[in-house]
Image 1 (tube, one colour):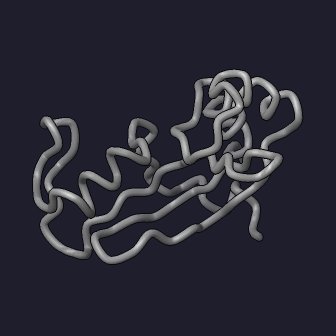
Image 2: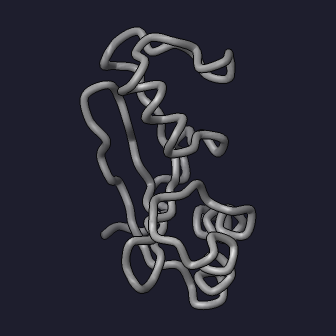
Length: 114
């Protein structure tokens, strides 16, 4: 898969969580989700955001582009060992799809740098 640097010019919503994305694009349709996000008006409205996929032994960060029709993975990579260990502690070892922690975000921002 391509380097994350290839996506450094994308507008990334660092505040979008997996739960917010599902609510905004799938569950409730054209709502503003408590005013934090603009309403979805068409399939041309999309958001780029990161999640941490923690269903396997090693968590991985995924850059997703979501609209009302699909969620497309643009980039994915396993977290570095120290970041992964810290993340596992943060979520208590529970499986799931999570919003990135501050430590993960910091690592991702470094990966985006030219």
